[in-house]
Length: 138
Length: 114
Image (cartoon, rainbow over the protein chains, first blue to last red):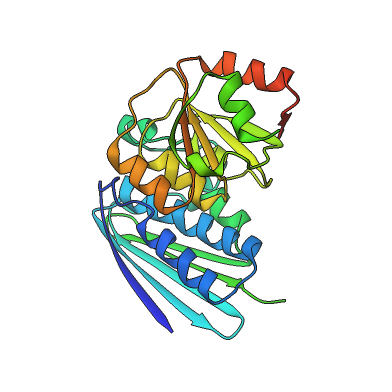
């Protein structure tokens, strides 16, 4: 089963829509609630990142037997130094993003912490691509 | 402690989930930083926040936090109420400050998380 979502940069009202939808789907599939929480927190942080930093983005969720793979791709300024961006506390977020309760430099570390597998690639001036993969069964 | 006791202690208004006030609350976490809330891994937790926007409710939804109190009588939007209802979140407001809310609940035996 595949799910697809579009994200608009700057659209804070709908940030979290995809994570909320995925949460419902995984609940219907009777996935363990702790595993659901890990995945949706990672996806929510990724959604907020796209809304906060990029112009637009897409989320592709692929459900395999026992596993979920999520690809989040955006068109945006990209990340110059991924190693730096992965450090807790490092942030380039705008004051508007901080007013929404984000932008403290915890997003990417939070995503990584909640994923079994995590891969990020970015081209400055073009955009960022993030692939996360989690087991959803024992 | 049950939620209705918290409502009484904090002189709180119940905006959603009035029929859910028998829920048991063991822990509380006070923050305006949603990424920090997303690191919370406890059940039966109350989120105390001064952040009154959709993201505070979304964050609770993603973190499996079933109850949120917005402090200092910050205005709560219709969209927040709608989302809280849809997510089965009890949404409360209090005129008390975050410090006062935290102090009262700490004294009453609600456990901190970190």
